[in-house]
Image (cartoon, rainbow, N blue to C red; front, side, top):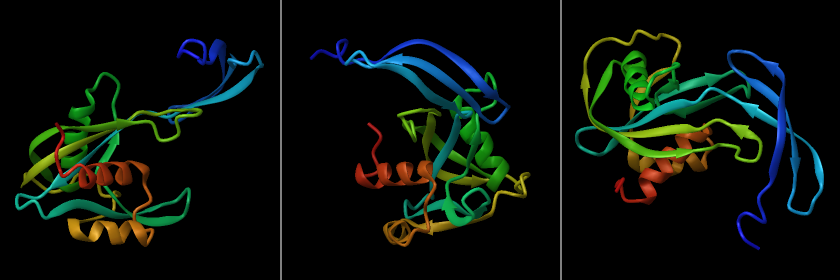
Length: 183
């Protein structure tokens, strides 16, 4: 079966709820088998975040913070929502400075991924920053406690459930698995 023959067909989509933070729709779809039904589609605004590695290449900047929806504490990368018309890389750098006061010496795309590809539209853009310059005090005060976490602690933090954010997991595991290269 070719890609076209196995593709789901969208006949239309209607919004059932919309706010600044979430949009829920129902899509009228057909599967390759011919079965036709409505399927939920959820949209969240796209975020951008940064795996910021210190000048020695031994630590990553992370925030220890509480997330109220799942009621958990976990380590997360700095990042935030992409403003309308803003480039994801600009967002990553802006959020890094606002949240931590650090600016990366270099910044490049690491990976873009969809956290729940079956029914969620929410591309997450992860960037790799190398080196850091403290350029001021953080202007966002509700983003948690930032620390330079040793990279060799990351696998243990993941195993212990201390990193649960999907963007943080994907970004750090990508960085560690591919030998810290982006090419």
